[in-house]
Image 1: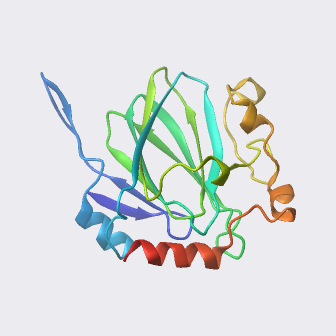
Image 2 (image 1 turned 135 degrees about the vertical axis):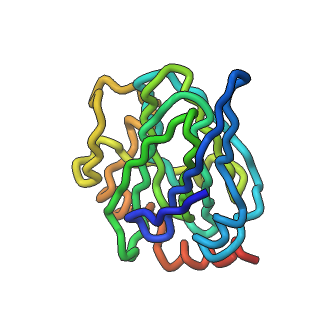
Length: 200
């Protein structure tokens, strides 16, 4: 498995080779040793594993949690294909405001590590796109926040525009500036402390 540091501080892409024969395909979306070498600590204790299935044109996000407690994610596409987006919305981060897009494909094991406080979104490019998540914390509805993906300040470029399929919650989400004004963005220093706590 190979690791690549992304343009967002603390975020990584992990990729490996898949093996296919007449039976199907075998791949490894997570290798603990590679993760530890790249991130500098073992993978967080997994508190929750989740999955979603989306049809082509579904856009989910931009989602994040506040720190503390925050929640780190390890994400891969188990089936189908998507454009996965990592967005640094941590106030005070050296890469605040940047984002990076990674294409994830169920036939080519590739995963993304989202450190605590980093925003996540994805666009399903095929029907029956299945996303799998390992999470450092359990789902707490009041701690789950969202940003407007069409906010021009975020600069997200994706096909489909207003014709994308979004939840009402995501369509009604505040802009980055509105969330910051209301104190609804993670603070980088708090997120760094939360990440350090994942190592213990």
